[in-house]
Amino acid sequence: MKILVTGGAGYIGSHTCVRLLEEGYEAVIVDDLSNSSIVVLDRIEQITGKRPGFYPVNICCKKELDEVFEVEKPEAVIHFAGFKAVGESVQKPMEYYSNNISGTLTLTECMKKHGVFSLIFSSSATVYGEPDRMPLGEDCPKGVCTNPYGWTKWMIEQILTDIAAADERWKVTLLRYFNPIGAHESGLIGEDPKGIPNNLLPYIAQVAVGRRECLGVFGNDYDTPDGTCIRDYIHVCDLARGHVMALDHMKDQNGTEIFNLGSGRGYSVLEVFHAFENACGKKLPMEFRPRRAGDIPVSYCDPEKARKILGFSTEFDIEKMCADSWNWQKKNPYGYGENAPCEA
Ligand code: UFG
Image (tube, rainbow, N blue to C red; front, side, top):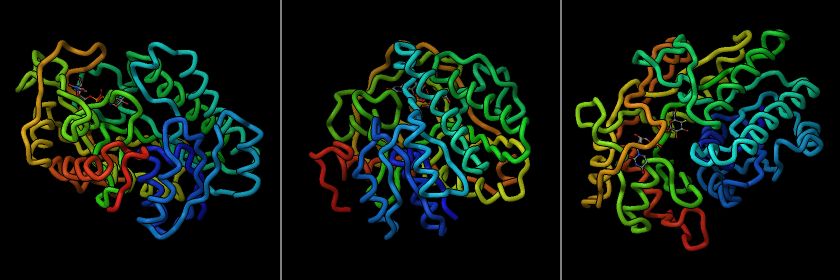
């Protein structure tokens, strides 16, 4: 079965392509490389022995995307492509709404035209806003997002739900990710943010490898046991496996399904920081800084629905997540950049 993967050269997309290929699916990547590297294709081939199809196409370009569907005739789509930097989205809302929402609409139009009605969408726990209960179950109401990036996820979920409600041929799965971290254990693929990392793990990893001086921990006065925020971290390979399980489940699915993908267990910023110190075997510089705007104190999921319906549960703990992040970072200090030939 052939799967078209938008954003398949990115962090989560590349790990999902590996899993798809390992499980006997064919993968065709559509990625404009605006936040990813062509080197990923070689790395995926090194890991799996198979090379995914690849088109350097922006999903907003209808004509080019249409040609990909015409030539490749995929049976389902996993849709990762989109801008994802929270802070940048506040500065550039038009770009975010335009790229993420128009891209999705162009994609669904092409899918419909070519008779492809199975779609998995890369959503986020951010759609819950600032919730009043924990853990977060899929039945928790969607909330008020704190930035345009979050609203694009929120709105795309709504658009896809409406599309599936209007035409029963559609099968839509919305996967709400918690905090994906880690890397493939080969160290050949991993997270390679451009510029200063926004997220915790890549920041710590760049401190550990000597690219940044010191981790700033945003807030130590939250109402949590150690005062720092708590998140539900999930190994990116567990997350990738969740996508393939969701794809398998789609055969028996009607309409829209929503699943949280997380472990159900929260870790504080300090716990993650110390787990990373253990993984890299050295003390790292850290200082407390003021709270970051928009952060909620605690977020973790109720993973029961994914367990019951998909049979999905996470395998890898925080130690393994940090060990694999470090393995990737140390073998590729500059990510996929030219300074970092990788001989994993
Ligand atoms: N943090 C620091 N220092 C840093 C970076 C992060 O202390 O340099 C803290 C944050 O304040 C937060 C925690 O680490 O308390 C996790 O922050 P991340 O930025 O790694 O993750 P978020 O939970 O803020 O964001 C993630 C995804 C978003 C998604 C959001 C909500 O990256 O895409 O979850 O689901 F929108």
